[in-house]
Image (cartoon, rainbow, N blue to C red; front, side, top):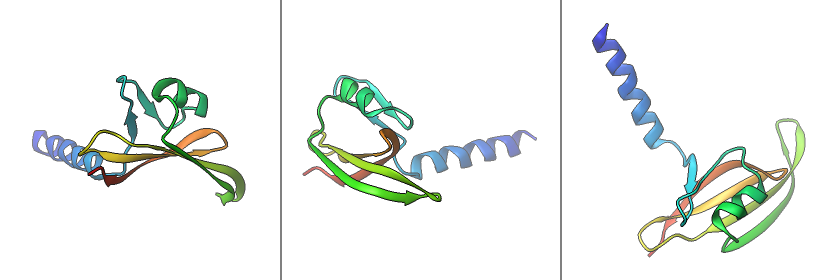
Length: 99
């Protein structure tokens, strides 16, 4: 039984580290997660380096307003793209590594 639970735990850890970004760590140490609002993200991380309003997009059978914020971290880290659906964080995406 012990072997089985450790195998499951190992699989979960691997899945966590190989999946898309789940959070954005701000310069001040605050953490942005799915479900946070645009207001909360700006309060935690400040103004984004770029903002893009994508428009009204059909998701799951209904239309949502999609907006994206771009945060550029220090050299060597990954760009962070925060996608909002109707003003709420729906996805946090790792972009390319800053050179």
